[in-house]
Length: 348
Image (cartoon, rainbow, N blue to C red):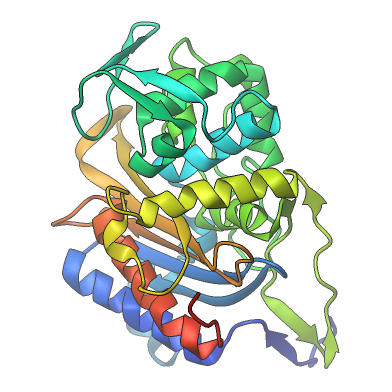
């Protein structure tokens, strides 16, 4: 780019306005430390909206708080929690270790090399399929699937999905997250990494990984600059990380999250076929997981067969609610509910 050239972003101003309004509503209700939301066309990886709270008023920069200068979409390092389970499942599917109907014995508590793994809801002994493990968001199930992969393969897949390196989106201040390599794992790493604890990512990395699930298996650099000096920028080429069949299996299983008994059943939009995943992760404070501070998130797409919209909402340390299904999923529902008629996406 030359100085003085006009730059046009990929953002849609009406959608951007709506996403900022929804985030302000989340902030008013849950008083979080911060929040971010991103909407993308997963087929082109163009970002259609990107909002952060607290907001920065460009007309009044002098009185802005320090946190409002942070672009949390690329600068927030957070443990993704259960949104990461789709990565674990996708890896095991692509390596032909499981199918959606593979059954696992899920005990009430899993003892794994000296640590105890619990699910969010107490239960007895259960038999769950891979699809049900995602629907009910079973931590124990994710660890059992992860143990089929083993540390080396799991680590390779985490990097294949783009974690541990910056996405390369044209925004300043992008973090790369903190992902240990398999040779740095402790004896208990594989007891929490498969369900998104013990590694940190950025919202943009999660969005890019889910875009690959949405678009049929291709990981691309997210794009926010549409044209420079009137010349359209080429779409990022990307590279295939999943077969289209595995990506479709993942989408079909992630539909269950919106169904009765799923972790975001309240966020469904009547008439629309959607797939998504909740995340609720404890925050590590001084080397120990907090029992009171969490990051709640939700990522989802519509429609399931050929997704045209993908959105992520991340709420950092909400108060009065902690779960991705109750804090972040309703914001996703509001954003997508507004966007489907606006973009002409008709009900099924």
